[in-house]
Length: 295
Ligand code: ADP
Ligand code: MG
Image: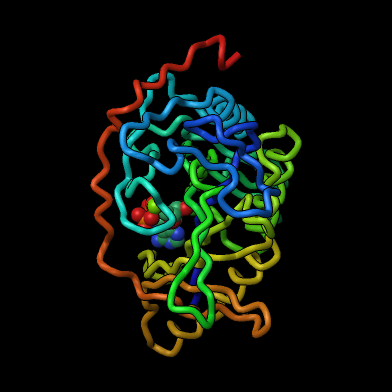
């Protein structure tokens, strides 16, 4: 029996800007001391208001243009509500209905060629790229009954790129991700250092059977290198194939990558779908992009 892998990526990258997305606190990924680059706005004290950082908007547009995307000229921000101590406001300002960039693509080398890209290459379709804010970092201490939180990263501009499920192998994931990383670094959009968490790759993977029906999707997170992402894909294709061949079912869940054991492992089963209660951000005006900015 033949199973065809169906793989899509979700990739976050911190933007290289002088200041954060909604305030003038510094965006310094190298700050070692916790809670230095913070202010009442990124700590969301009552009464503070966000102001959009034009540089962050420009960098997402630049990423979109480099990746053959359409640019949304009339867009806006939304609140994604969830409650966690790394998120001082209790919601993340993000984009949901109208991402800044949409319907792009990146051609990677491929053998044999497929899709409409030129010979010897394969077209990976990019669904969207949107702009949002990063959260802080939590430190869970092994022998303590409390955790620590560092808000230096809270409010750092972050873009999220989502692809269509166009990948079939770990090698394709590797080719795409390294090309993307080079483009972002070359254009000075992001340092995109995966070890530092400036670029984070999440893999969605399922297998399609001979009947053509899409199988259950597994998500792999916390992959902090391109090699780990590709290795995790190849491992997961084998694991899911063996399960299906044995007549068992693939469970919908989030898995991590164990580099020492060279295997994915279950992190949590998919809880009931999150209800983020998205609604338009009332503290920011709609975002209007001019032709001049795009130019
Ligand atoms: P979710 O709502 O579960 O986050 P999305 O539709 O937002 O799902 O897709 C998230 C990612 O998963 C995208 O990169 C998409 O290409 C990929 N994806 C969607 N369906 C599948 C599938 N059946 N198998 C593998 N990847 C998929
Ligand atoms: Mg999603």
